[in-house]
Image (spheres, rainbow, N blue to C red):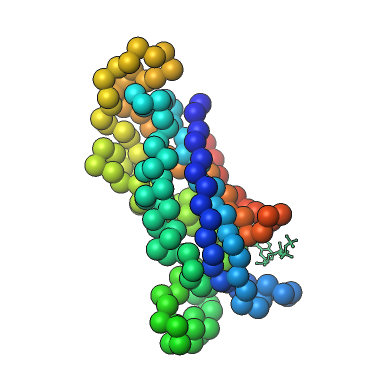
Length: 171
Ligand SMILES: Nc1nc2c(c(=O)[nH]1)N=C([C@H](O)[C@H](O)COP(=O)(O)OP(=O)(O)OP(=O)(O)O)CN2
């Protein structure tokens, strides 16, 4: 089954409230996010999904919400309020501590399913059905059906070059 992955890098500050070590301090990471899409068949252009579409939709969301921002758990609201009163930034709050695991899970389950809604896609129970196919090319690897499923299968978040967490759909 075909997969494709787009990688994004972004800078953000966070802290793990109640962590018993150094990560309770506000600190920053150069994060790396690997976003993997799956489809049951390739489209007529031989793609799971165009890298450019992942960049504009998912990359756009990351740049708007996480890049050069501070990501905090909602239980850290007082800290966020103080930071934004000085910087004016729109702090990104999560329902749980902003670990790499929580960010990967949130991206996979809450953000991307509501994000990739192109004119050509219909949303069906969080799976995306691609409706418009280009004319057949005769290439055997390419789908001959007019419908195929495309969805984000895995999100991997690196905090450092040696530490990452991932969230994956369970079939
Ligand atoms: N399972 C997790 N453990 C930790 C997380 C996390 O998101 N998931 N996060 C942290 C801290 O944010 C910390 O900044 C990153 O931890 P660590 O990899 O230990 O950081 P280092 O800078 O020491 O990384 P090196 O690559 O080993 O230098 C803590 N734990």
